[in-house]
Every structure is written in structure tokens, then in C-alpha cells.
Length: 277
Image (tube, rainbow, N blue to C red; front, side, top):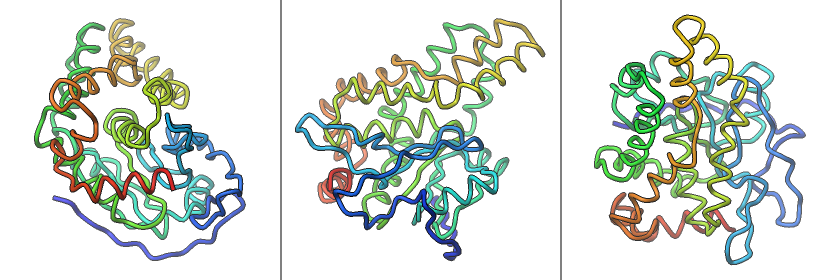
């Protein structure tokens, strides 16, 4: 069940803001790199160019890992004027590490994936098992009806809510990565660009990944550390597994959105307009 929490406006735009009313010919600044939200970025990247030659609209949809910003980073995020934050973590994940919601954004909790995922991941013992596990998670984004329902709620909200919006999970790479890849595909961004953007998690989260791997390896062994690295990183085969599932069951991403996620064509059209306007 989706839970909504409303926050009142309480901040002003700063020099790093990406105002929603920016003129088309006004260059937007680069998305700020945030130390305390390490996988925070614009879904449109630098303005990814589509196969038709259009550029994706920046400052519309943002992606991130868990929102636990420092005061300095919170001020930067609030300067973006977000209207909504969508937390797609499980109930357990969200309760263990609650979001710090930037004003004036509305908070919506839309759980995606089972509560048991973390325990299953921690039980893995080999690199091959970890890789297969991550590929299967991505397949479930397409094959599992409960998971599809979560993505359906997320995309309906993104389509019908005005202003800049942000969605996130725990690491900002799997559930969040799939949602970002779908939006980029809908906009018409080439698959190779989408994959390259997906793999940027390994750059944005490198320090966090290395620190966590070192901690686990020191407490257990190097093999377990490698398993953790595969779980915390992304690989082209993870995203590829989801796209292959779409190809096999729906033929195209748009069919997946309308048949699999049961989104009305008007909602899909509204998303496309936002992505390219």
C-alpha cells in the first residue's frame, strides 16, 4: 500500500537549482555530486540524445540511493524544488533507515521487491551465485506480477505529478536503475547509452562499494568480499537480463508498460512528453 507524507515548502532555490521553468535555450548546470547521497543523478544525464536527434529534458526526473543527506547536501537537493520523492524500498528497509525528505517534496512509499531479498543475498557464497541472483532480480522486474504492480504505481505517479521528481531505493542501482532505463528507453535513447548510464553506478558508488567490500572481507574472507562487490555493483548482464525478459514476453518496452504494468496509453504519452519537452 502506498503511504503519502506531505511536507511544507521551506527553502529557496540556490545557484545550483534546476528550475522547472528554465527556458529551453538556458544551459542547465551539471547535476551536483553529493557525498552523502553518492548515487544521486539526473535520469537525463547531460541531456542524452535520442535516436530521433532530440535531447532528453534535464531537471525533470532524478534518481538516487537512500536519502540520508548531510545538511549541506540537503540544502542542495532542496534547491532543486522537488515536488515528490518516491521510496521504492521494502517496509523493512524504509523503517531501518528513514528518508530525510527534502522540502517541499511529498513523500510516497511504494515498496518493490520482497522483504526476504536482503537475507537471500547475504546467504550467497560464490561469485557465480551472486551474478545469477542479480540477473534473476532484474528478470523479476518483468516477470513477477507483484513487482510489476510496484513499478506501475511509480510510473503512474511520475506521469501525473507536476514538477521535478525523485525516485530511489537503497543503493539506487537495481529497482532505481530499471526505472531509469525504462524512462530512457521510452524517450528513445539508444540501448548502448542506457547501458553506459546504468554502469555509472560503479563510478558514483565506487568509494562506498570499496569500503563495504573491505569491511566484509576483513570480517569474513576475500571470497565473501567478492560476493558483496557483485551485489553492490552493477553489470551489463544484470540490466540485459531484464531487457531480454521484456523482449521475450512483451516484444517492446512500450508493450511492457501498457500490458505488463497496465499503464493507460495516456500515461505513457504523458511520460514521453515530460522526457522530451
